[in-house]
Image (tube, rainbow, N blue to C red; front, side, top):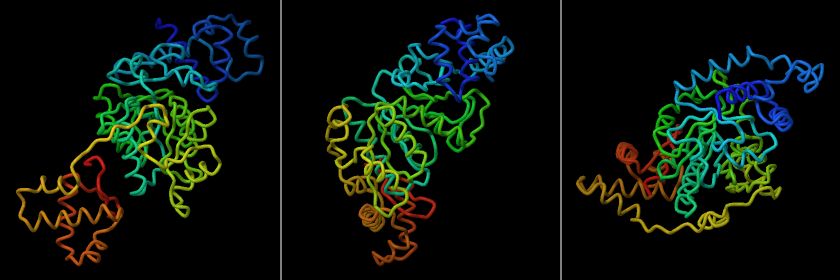
Length: 385
């Protein structure tokens, strides 16, 4: 596709970003972005009507803005893919509110990104140990299916980044859909994760926002519709009743896509969205994780027999003093049985001094067997299992 069509597409995307259905109707009527910008003044007046706020933006000065933008994008290794082009996600193209085009940043050609089933894994920023553990388990289980899907999420704190990092850990490609321009990373704390993603084949950063777009609240819903539209299925692992993850799952249901929810405690606000979607019969509950891949049409997850946690710990600390080794094993096994336990609670349960527990937890965390959150709650890291 020539640069002129891309320039016109970038411009239409900028003009109609929040009303993509209007742009789709124009393209259906006139055939291409370039054809819209080739219309005479009278044809534009007839197409838009006398009071349209969009009419005045169809001009050469707007194309010049897009030309400068395209030059800057090429320096960043980014591309803009028009709807109808091979690199545009095929399922997203079916949505009536699909954007005119997408900005994509990847080491993989855009037309090679969408050759496998796409599954979105989304949820709350306020992630609990239960949600983190099961988000990782879900992604690991999907990695063991013959279908080996592309994991899509929104790169946010909580469930999203957990899903992206789990995909990288378990050998699945992942796409992060951003609520900002392709020239930025949001949140900034995930810049290292973005670099890892961009250095991995089959992964990409994607957005329909023009460069320079700030992460304002309204943009997150626009981002969420892309996540839902790209994916054949959406998994909500933990979300409040009005959370962004719940909105993404509802959008996916509205597109006629499969939706799955991880059930949670009835009194847990972080699972209220999941439980409500299940109750409304808009989502299937994840009741048997081993059957999830087959339910999605990805094939049955193969069973992988691995060494037990105790065996892995004995192997990892074989050269350590016996007291250190046995203490670490005892504490790790207790953490596995009591997800989210604090060091103080470990001291109480096992009758151990605080210094010994603190040293063991630090050792286990530094070696990747355990992780702790801001409240010092300890959990076994599933990526080690």
